[in-house]
Length: 342
Ligand SMILES: [Zn+2]
Ligand SMILES: [Zn+2]
Image (cartoon, rainbow, N blue to C red; front, side, top):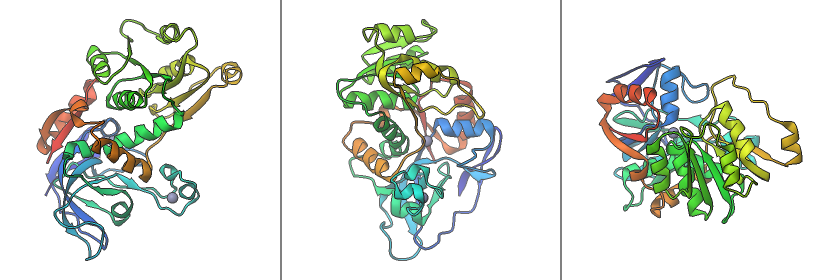
């Protein structure tokens, strides 16, 4: 089969590799669509990801496809079924799993290799984090489930209520998912981004106020003026930059909560005003990854039609163009996702 193999920094090759062999309980999926993700672009740029992938390795993690083979007889899925599989599954036995924090599992099993004709889904992911795609849901919509689950969990962590005002910094696919979900929950959304195309997309997703950081270099005061000087109930940082982490803290109200969703480059540090955190009772959280319960909820949201690929995917390319796609995504910000059709 053809598959993309990541060899290191900005080095990947689409080449023939053996179709994965299955062990008992695994399934083999013919990939119908694999979506590009900011994490993949980051991994391509750096050449590794400490937790998720060590090269040389097959690559890509947001996928949907058809079951074409099973390891052993029994199991949840039959050949021919359309499925979406998450990129990890927890152990269900460690301290964190027992507390319902499966995203922090000490033995989280990651799976990569979506940019390929076939991908092996290991038994643990088959059992815990794979779903049949409802007939009315497209492969591309289904493949959104993984990033959506991360965003859904991040939003739940903030305690956002209907009627709250939320500021969302960064309007890539993740920021736009926050806009959509916050609107679905009945919040007023202040969307903060740089490019006009991103702000237009945020407006289409329902954002109530738009702030362009091309026009306002530090949007904190403007956010305050839009909230009677108070600041927003919730602020989301979806950029991954120490400066915007600061903005998020500075633009929430007293008693408000911040979610540092965007991961900064390794070894980044932020210094925060302790008086502000203390006397204003600001709750700071950060979110990583998803849990099986959120994958399931994300599929429900997609299935209900509340989130759809047409708002997050704007390009389709064959697998053979993956290197060019990655180079393009790396050098131009402000993109939606590309659907790779192997
Ligand atoms: Zn992803
Ligand atoms: Zn665990």
